[in-house]
Amino acid sequence: MKSTSSLSLIAGAVALAAVTGFAALEVPDGSGPAEARTAARLPVERTSLLCPAPGLSDLSETAYTAYTPPNTSGGSAAAGTAELLSSAKDEAKSDDKDDKDKKEKGKSKKGKEADKDKPVVSLKEPGKPATGEASGADSPALVGTATGRLAPGWTAQQTTTIEAGDGRGLLGISCTAPDTDFWFPAASTAKSREDYVHLTNPDDTAAVADIELYGPDGTLKSDVGEGITVPAGSGVRVLISTLTSKAVDDVTVHVTTRTGRVGAAVRAADETTGSDWIAPSAEPAGTLVLPGIPADATSVRLVAFAPGDDDADLQLKLLGKSGAITPAGHEELHVKSNMTAGIDLKDVTRGEPGSLMLVPSDKSRATPVVAALRVVRGKGDKQEVAYIPATGPVAARATVADNRSKGSVLSLAAPGAAGTVKVTASAGSGGGTAVSKTYKVAAGTTTAVSPPVPKGLKGTYALTVEPQSGGPVHAARTLTVTVDGIQMFTVQTLPDDRGTVEVPAARQDLSVLDD
Image (cartoon, rainbow, N blue to C red):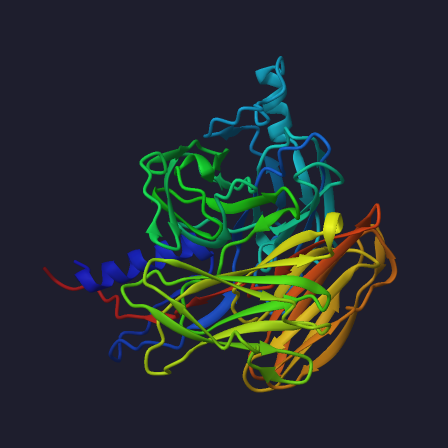
């Protein structure tokens, strides 16, 4: 019979192949002992993205852009597919007195199923973006899957324009991969805010999620945030002010799942500054970088949270055009364990683009934290808001879609050693030729540039950042659209696209043994 270790190895390799499509088991000639071989990084063959329901306004117009960079590292020769499909269901788990979330009455079940089966966006080939659109308050969440050569680095951008009303603004978000754990600093239950947690389930079985809220004094206790069912292939919206009786300016939202997985995002709307999406913060870490503060920011507020048992003492460093400085009057921030801390940095960049870096005051005590920035541009009735979560560096490659011929600014921050990156502007969704440019980012600085634009651009295009040499680089894209004299804007960070997966090559003696 075969040995137990041999059978375990075969089972493990088969399971890995099912996930990545790239596991291989090598059988030696039996003349020598078992030998472990070096793992390889290979392109993924399947990936998922989830886009939240766009909004609650009948005045909203939403553009979707999907893109996969050309693959230069081998991988599947299969053409594959990459589609964003309507969930056809999006439910409100709150007592919204205006009933904005309800579906259009009278729409038949057959019609809903037909809409669900038709892709909102269908990508045909790497290197060229594909677009789609939706309008109105009833647009549902989208569930997307990419396979074959369209999977490695697949990204999708959702950009919504609301020209008037309390929720006005340019709301942008890079559609997220499903997961089981999300942190959202900079949310709020204040009376001037209307913040929703959006949960989207990509799978064929229901997911069960919990939403925890933390304010400046600790947990905001609530029973209704526990055990929220997210039906298969659909989205749920939860108004967070219905989860607690306390009105708090700075709230950290923690989303976890008991069963299944979801995509999660927070839509924040303010009576004065408009609305935008809050994307998840990077995982808790002792040092964080929040890249891409616009040069003309009139107000910047930092919100941080320490999820562990220890308090965090943080030094604030602004990575500016010429180097790293400590903001005067805001040298340090103390974050108590399981309590949300906020600090108003005002116009911290003073006319220059920058990025914020949080480092432990005591290097021997690097308490993990999560963080996000609330950034306001403009004054009076022309204020607009965007949110910048902490984000990791670009390890191999990162992409952001939906760039226009004008209005995009790319921020590149090198918190340590100087780094060099290549930035590629893809072909346009309607035509144009890709172009690339290399940028060197000095140590401890932020470089903000108008990125390259494809030659003969028609439509929108994607920007892909690839490190070339030097230290780690963090990136963010600011997109600005002027509506009635108001500079509406949104900021998307560029975390690594995780387009490859480490696959071990295994060798094991599979010789048949006697009973």
